[in-house]
Image (cartoon, rainbow, N blue to C red; front, side, top):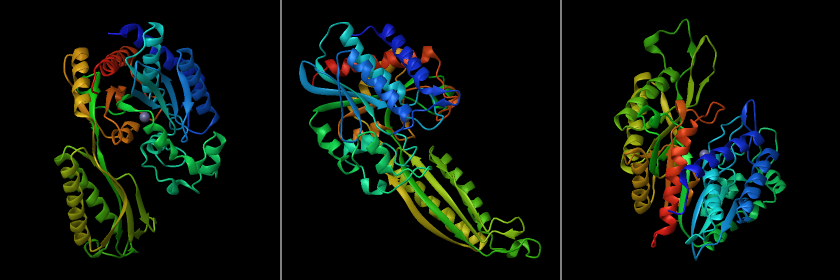
Length: 415
Ligand SMILES: [Zn+2]
């Protein structure tokens, strides 16, 4: 063991508090990507990494890479993101970056050259809070970024994407160069520590968990078209109420979610003409379905279509589907999952493992290098808000287990 785990975990928590003092206000964390507060966080990351003898470079997508040479060129990357949603929490992303910095600090402090070369990575714009594109920096590095989708987009204040990123030295046309730049780094594994952002660990009384993959997503819009009519004169049984068809579908989606132990969410509802005295002639809803099993995801989607067909029939309306996006489920690396479960078991007595509902930078990385994540519980399951919180002792437990995992990955050959 090259690390002093307890001491390291305490210091990483102190780092998080230091970062919060620098970039948060009474409404929460303010490190939205491509803003001066975000740059402050990036300057903080660079200064910390350099203090530990690492060399910090920025790739073509704006990702920061802090490199510490090892005995071999084989490299391990440890990362997450310092950007956040507006009025966000202090831990989402920042926890994983602080853990990466602590790894560098451990080697620096103890004067040990790591067996493999290390990179602590701060991915740019994971949240997509301003331009609606999640995992921007890591998808450029993985090569999956569709830059044409982003060109011409503006934020709520009318600032163009191109303009915003150029302010921070990133040329949109060159962002995908980050892929070749990452290839040249000879990465053999990628590790990410993150808060859960949900209530599952807390509800099962677990403080930390191995994360063995991330859910796939089927996201669609469904437009129900019926007939607007007078709310007073038209008998109930004769109506073509588009909203009722949507509502019946939404309730049935919940049953599908329960059946597959998955999630189905209707997050948007738009009723037309949206008048108190008119039976809705049109209703457009969104449907977001997620699970880790590709067959289940397929079945869940098929069943949703059947449900919509039935509801349409019941209410005499028609339904039109529109695809918003599909993301295949991503399983992480088997060997790293085993190692991660082993350290989780050492730490909490059980090899807890779960999959992630939200996307993370690690999902982008998993298509490129063997990857695994670890979660720390979130109090009340809250995230993306200023109430986001994990008690210090639980954070420390997570950081300790994660440092332990890093130590194993750095010192074991062949991974
Ligand atoms: Zn995050």
